[in-house]
Length: 326
Image (tube, rainbow, N blue to C red; front, top):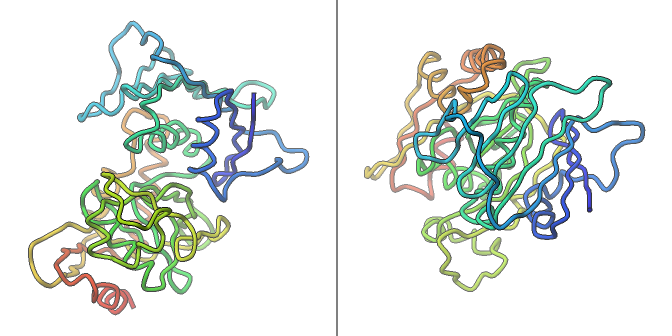
């Protein structure tokens, strides 16, 4: 059995698995956030054990309490103290919702199939499984690409296919600093809601290389691969400082259009809150719903928000965004 430790925002997590494939994917996903040894005298908040199996064990006998509309996740609340998270066909995770007596680590147990290592499911499974305990420690996830510039964070928030990753990478290539791709941690600190640097792989579609050819230098094999999704190395401009939390000052909600010129339109705080909630709140975690909504409400008042209608002017977009957000 091999273990390593992950410092994810306020959480110290002990990761443990007997399977080399699981450990390798953890090292890729959490690169830069793993600790060779935990700080002296500390006890992990969570003990996350994951193992591979040819197929998943039987599901709980009762119907799920929540099912994702696209079939990506089923949540079973068998008792008030724990839940089962089912990621068909990739994994089944048992997750206690209350800490054991005496300060012992919370035990998370995951059974994974080889399907967990395709289509980004491994990253989704890990963050969804850790999110309830991040929330219980005052740290909340949002589906976003995060960048920082001059000590201020900008979030690009939206569903898959909205253009947030391509736009975010465009900003990074223009000199902005990467905070997180696809998921970003948020935390209330003195001075307001901050975005915390967040680990995760950066995957793009081959078409993105046509829009941003400078990304080719970040491909592990830069010879024109044909895979449906390409993983970029988090080196050079994609390097992130795990300690660099910054206040959120701007939120962009991108969507792709056929117009030649991109447009930024101010968005109200009420609409911002509605969009943030849709991309952040897990409706099944009722115990953290109010503090989660409170944080998003404060963020919607704190940040300047814009609808970003993406046009064909990819090269000039970073300058347009920088001028608007100044």
